[in-house]
Length: 179
Image 1 (tube, one colour):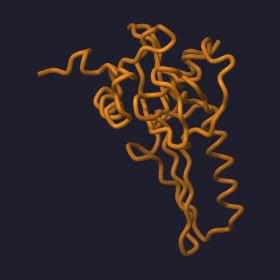
Image 2 (image 1 turned 120 degrees about the vertical axis):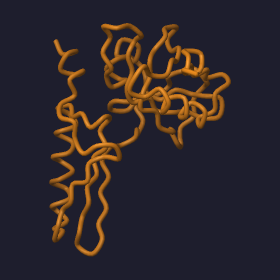
Image 3 (image 1 turned 180 degrees about the horizontal axis):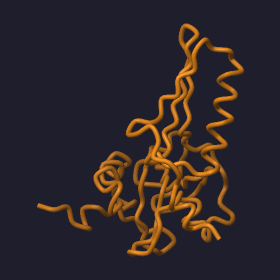
């Protein structure tokens, strides 16, 4: 049977990190997992464990460049993308989608989509931007990472893209949400 909205809801008071990740992966892309934050329903995407952090279940307690950390029953997760339910709502980086609620929230080191490793003079730089979509900030971060990788003077630099796709172009949601 089709997965209903009740099966796609994350209840922070009862969900473990692993259960929340499973729900979010099953609903990623569309329609998204449901989660109540700031007394509002949100569709959330791109969840990752927030290792090394701690926060109360159901509360957003930290933010990174584009993600917010929310506590669950056994630990926190980073929410990478979010939107309010509704046909006209745009999926955006969580810090942009929830900007009105994050004023005094502390910053923490969040998940990075950029990873560099080197072996025998060959450097590999992966860039795993959500759905392969690049914002201006993502392009600038990738450019800086390429510069840092080349400063190590590898014989070869390989750009590997992400787990699902190499690149999907521009993040159209950010463009649509821009003033």
